Length: 81
View (cartoon, rainbow, N blue to C red):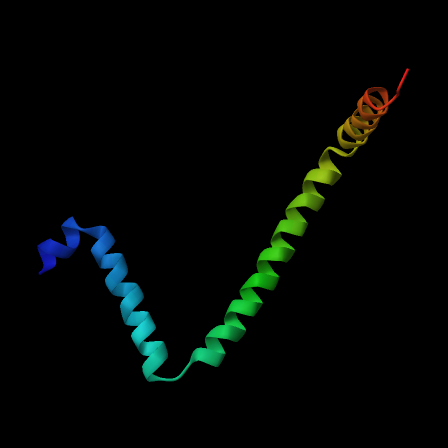
C-alpha cells in the first residue's frame, strides 16, 4: 500500500480530502467550517487590497500618468469631428 500511494500523489490527495470531509461530517462541524470559510474570504480580500495598496504606493506616478493617457485616448476616440 505504501508504494501505491507514493506512486499516485493524486489518489493520496483525494484520500486526505475524503478523510477531512468524513471527520467534518462525523463531528458535525459544518457551522465551524462555514465560519472558517467566511474568515478566509475576508482575509483573502484584505490580502488583495494590501497588495494593491503596496503596488499603488510604489508606482503612484506611473499609475496617474497611465490614467491620464487612457482618458486622453478615450476622449480623442469619442470626439466627433
